[in-house]
Length: 306
Image (cartoon, rainbow, N blue to C red):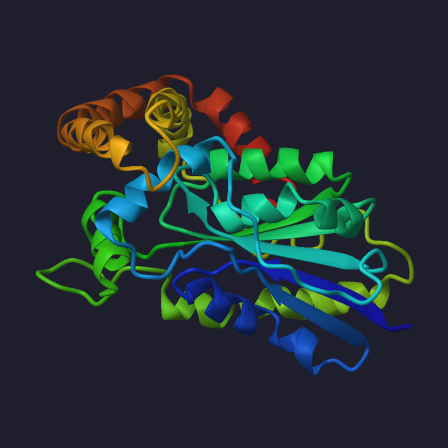
């Protein structure tokens, strides 16, 4: 029996494209699997690398799930896929605008209804809050999240405060001045093929709809507990500032520039002063409440686990 698999993804820099190509190569090569791929394209320009102001100007709408429409695409029998794979990046602790646009669309309601859904994330290191939002959107489309795979940058948390913005704003991801190379490592991309092999195995084993995790015990996702509280705090802050900035007009409005400038200064000051102190405090809290945090981490790593 031929299994139909749909991949819907958005990759701004092209990095997630490389991950998905390698990961899904076993599916491409298997004649018993029909693979359809949709690369989302926004009706607005999100070219890479970002310009400084365009990057921050996308922040309020990302947080409030208020995206521009995507360009239309066509699928034959969109309601008859056996597995849906969604690939995305977090923007400001939220799904990217093109991915939000898809999951809020009528097409997504048709495609995802009563279907097993697997998500693939490419990120710097903070993805938890974005994925919580994505799970809610999938649920509203009546899809069932059965697996999640996370690929994060090879740079450490502090290094990536330098290397990731440099890559996003200049397109340069090479190592420099002792800093690591930005982005997901080549080794992680190459090893992603193991997920595709498992998918082929499971798709061939099942003659009915898949209704449970397929990628357990493959190292699909590992929550870094240093970011659990930090992301919650950051998301609340983003919503407050996002609401304030939206009062000054829509994305692209020049009226936003003064408040955006103030927010950027606030954010840089926060990163330099408050973030290091908060990291030390959170390290102490994690030691005191290790058991509780381990349970939270296990929930966040579901359904695929480590």
